[in-house]
Length: 151
Ligand code: DQA
Image 1 (spheres, rainbow, N blue to C red):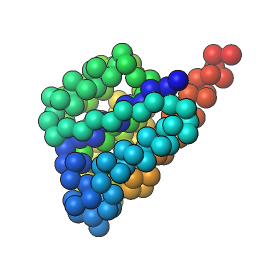
Image 2 (tube, rainbow, N blue to C red):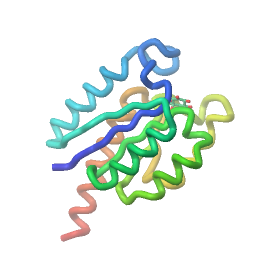
Image 3 (cartoon, rainbow, N blue to C red):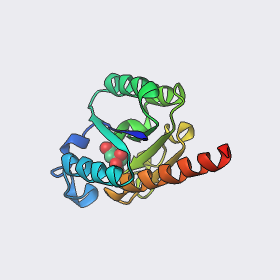
Image 4 (tube, rainbow, N blue to C red):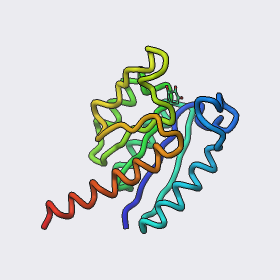
């Protein structure tokens, strides 16, 4: 059974109230619940964590390395400038998919660049809460390909 860790960065605990025209009306709890249900249908376990603190996110990434098979990471605004978070992702072997609710490439110019993307498996951006579900589906494909390569 695969174990997935979803890590949400700063201000994502404000979802539901925070700029709903950009981020939608679902709360973080509702998004996590949807992901939990999707993971269950795939036969996987899923845990979720949110922090507004860079160091706590780094600790969560380090700890996930030995406990999980995949990480779905929305680094929030840290996406755009946290070299510490980038180094944390680079320091682990578990694959990380970077996700964003909004399309960061269609917003303020400071959001166009991700310092995380270069060390992530890939990036999914702009599909609202479905960005997280698409990351689950991407991991389903990646795991299936790994199986084929092992045969
Ligand atoms: C975000 C995009 C970031 O630019 C922003 O700072 C966030 C949320 C997103 O999910 O669209 O906090 O990561």
